[in-house]
Length: 392
Image (cartoon, rainbow, N blue to C red; front, side, top):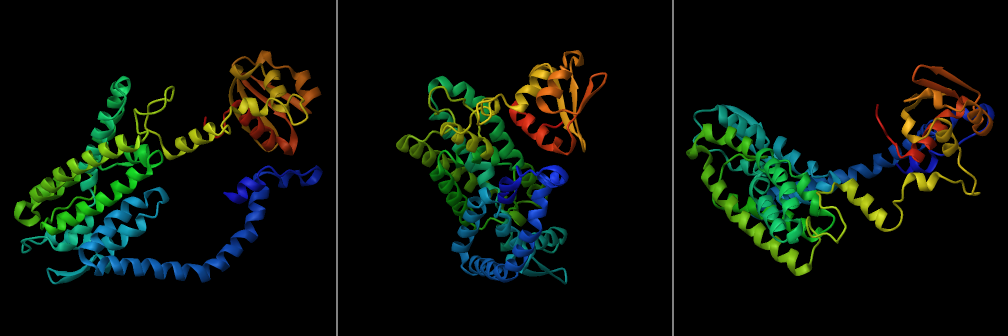
């Protein structure tokens, strides 16, 4: 990303035009990737040793290890590294080794699958605790959402209810938590830390009270795994009881912290701010806008640094305006457009002011010939019109 952002706007003249823009990024990346590969051969073994060491600590420290596992599995979600926490425990010897039906299995998930299929197994092994990660998804976050609803401004509660109910249902039924977590992860990081710690504590509680229920995600998984196996083999009622307890823990802790620290969770935004669940991308854009960075592309591109009207503004005018442009694309040398009314195209303006070498019309399809610089022309036009990354 750094290389792309640094070199994407590089352009050359004459015969070297073809190597500008995105092509130059790939050229620069060749030595960069080679250098990174060399560095990685020395750096990654150290990182891998650290990951293995963390896994060993989690495995060997009993309930503290379970707490650490559950906490990190949630806490690392913003980085995507949470997969490095739970995957080794589900599929390698870190999650346990057991002999079932005369065969040796490694990993929590492999073990309990074998135990499910073996009628001789009366109770699932303790290793199933590594796949009880869904308790905070089914219960905890629902309590958090109730707290956010009750602490929302009175005038926003109807909107907040409409927003949170689908998120709660998704979390409870399918275990998809991102819409809820990302709503407070960045506006109130302390809540996300508390959520992560409570997730770890809930798994410790399940282990202490002898639950052997399988609960990787939401209620659907919980039903499909545990009800057919019965209470004796899974002790699934313990899972539900612990879940209800943590529902209330989440609720009271979130409510206390939101009101005590005046956290701007959903429905408590400043006046004039839209009430919604924000994704990570949307939150960053919102922060940039607040710093004066997130201005409209049209305002940025309407004039060049010299104060003259930009090429993109002239192209837009010559094509009949923004509303007349349906799609923008390019081939090797042509800017390819679909227009609502091709008759509005001002060919003379395109040729005189934007150095277009020709204009070709075929129904609503209009091609403007610019030569090898056309990728740059298209990029600047899309930025000007605010259509970056638009897909037909």
